[in-house]
Structure formats: C-alpha cells, structure tokens
Length: 449
Ligand code: TRP
Image (tube, rainbow, N blue to C red; front, side):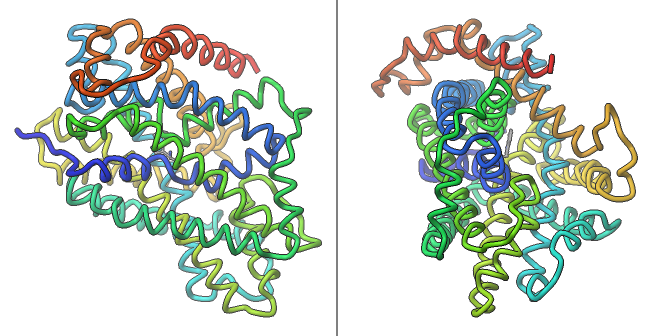
C-alpha cells in the first residue's frame, strides 16, 4: 500500500504548527504565565522549548520519517524485536486519552463561539454562573463535544493531503491573522499598559522547582511532543524537508502565538477596572466575556465582533490540534489492522465520544466520582500531561540518542548529506544526557510532591 504524503513543505510546517498551536497556547499558557511570575515564567518556558522541546521534536521527526510508519509501529521498524515498541504504544494510548478531554474544552469553545455569534454572551449577566451552569449541565457540553469531535472526524477522514494538509493551509493563516488583529486591538485599549506590565514584569520570587516543572510540562504539551503525535505527521514528510528547520519554525510559531495570546488577554483584562482577575482556567470562559462586555459598553457590536473573533480563534486552534491527535490513533488502526481509513477514523471517533462524554460529565453529574481527589477530567489531564508526556519524551530522546545508529540520525537530519546541520554533536549530547536527566529529575520531583 502506498503511504500518504504531505504535498509541500509549507503544508508540512503549517500542519505541524497546527498541531502545536492549540488550547495549550491560548487557554493554558496565559494562565500559567500570569500565575507563575510573568516574564520569569516566559523566560524559563523559552529555555525549555529551546533545549528540550525542539530536540525532542526533532527526534520525533527522525523516528517518523525514517520508519515511514505510524507511532505504534515505528519502534518495531527501527528496533525490531525490542521492548521499545511500548514507547510507541504509550503514544497511541496517550493521544487517544488526550483527545477525550481535549474534546471537552474544545466543545466549550465551540459552545461559546455559537453563544457569542447569537448574542447569548452579551448583556448584563453573571458570566461565572453562566460558565458554571453550562459546563455542569448534563447535555450541552456533551453535545458540543460530540459536534467538535465530528468536525475533527470530517477532516481526518479525507486523508493526509486532502484533509489535514488542505485544512491546515487555509486555517493556519486565518488563525495567525486573527491573533495579530486581536493583539493590536487589545494593545490599543486604555489601560493596556497595566496588563502588559502584569504579564511581562519578571517576578523571580515566584519561581521554584514546581514552576520549572510546570514550564516543562507546558512546553511539551504546547509543542505536541512526548508521545509521537508529530512522529505520525513526520511519517508523511517528504525526503527533502529539513527536519531541523521545520522543528525550529514550528517552535517559533508556537511560542509567538502563546506570548501573543497573553498580550491579547491581559491588556484587555486590565483595561476594565474593578473586575476580578481570575488567572486560572476561568480566565477565558468567565473573565474574558465580562471584559468584552465592559470594554465595549459604548459599542456593543464591536464588542461582539471582538468576542466572536476570539472564540473563532480558539475553535480553529483546537481543531487543528485535535486533528493531529485523532490522526495518531487513526493511522495506527488503519495500518495495524489493514482497515480502511474511514473505518479506522470512525472507530476512533466513537470511542473518543465515549471517553469525552465521561470527561464532560465530570463537571456535572459525575463530579462526585473521584480518584485520589481528582475528577475524571483532572485524572485524564494528570495521567497524560504529567506522566505519559514527560516519560514518553524522555524515552524518545534516549531512543534517538542511544539506540538509533548515529549515521541514521545524521542521514535524516542532513537529508542524505545535502543539508548542512550545525550543532549536530551538541544535539546528540542533549539527547543522550541533558534531556533524560532534566526530564527525569523534574519528573521525580513532581511525583514526590
Ligand atoms: N499542542 C496542542 C495544544 O497546545 C495539543 C496537542 C496536540 C498535544 N497534539 C498533542 C499535546 C500531542 C500533547 C501531545 O493545545
């Protein structure tokens, strides 16, 4: 069977950036930065991106393109008969689990987008109550999640080139444009300086080991690395794409969008006085709608446009990411069991809707179901983002640094000797020593907490 491929280098960068740019950038990053010392957090985050995120991303690219296989099989191709296959299977499992709870928050963004378009988010209302009632409701969040996963399904079913690449090529430029427009608008609001000051003033007093762990976890999650999501995409890369450059480009786009999201959110929040700033997850769903209303009280239509644009942005970002998560499991089933792409995607969709439903209901009727004090949703988040991703990332680095033949890695990075690759030895050094030690120590620290 001939393997699917991305059609162009631009498509490769945009699809990978589409995977990376997601709720992690727009929903989680601003909260994390706001709570953990502003620019101090951003600085540590950027170090994590550069010295851990990018190298691990390059490893995933090497593994995917070299093996020409989905994540579940890639390790068996590169190291046949070894236990390394578990790293790949862990990735497939992680992707599936993440998609379940990711679909829930994405569903909320879809619900908010619709509410914003139909005027349901304007006027004098209690937004905290609205969010609480909406997310705790027993059918609305489930319906939104189902709608969202279905949208994901529709794109994935069409295939790599016609579905994923095409969608990313249209939607990523739209997304980047919206980010820029919103940042300029937010910037020009009265009081924006105070918001920027809050976001960008470094407060190193807040930085402790826990913050470094958060920054690393956030970097992995935001860049989609640690489980083979991008290695599945890389198995569709053409031979002439530069892996280093692609990883660098994706990292820059991802980081810029995250910082710009902070620049959109905080000045807008601070332009409105007397409003409680919730730097937690409620930021996007409670504080912001309030801000949109108050900041534009004399021009409600402009406020509605601003708010609609913001939620469209969230939906697009979430969609390109969920597509990449869906593709991991779809490609695995499709190739492992030689079933049609449509059948594989349908199975993934159905099972995701099941896990998603349980996660969605854990804010309402199933809220009482706790494991170790965590709701089902939080448990999914904890197990995947805090355990599976860092561990996966560590093994991916070790596999590439220690197990794979140096000549294979060099061949992939130089594209068969065509490309000049600076820092090759430093890169290998990071893979062999720095990344495993850093991730392991941070990880142990987290578990012992
Ligand atoms: N990176 C995406 C975000 O920022 C989420 C995501 C997509 C992801 N694929 C992933 C996270 C793979 C971890 C692993 O929202």
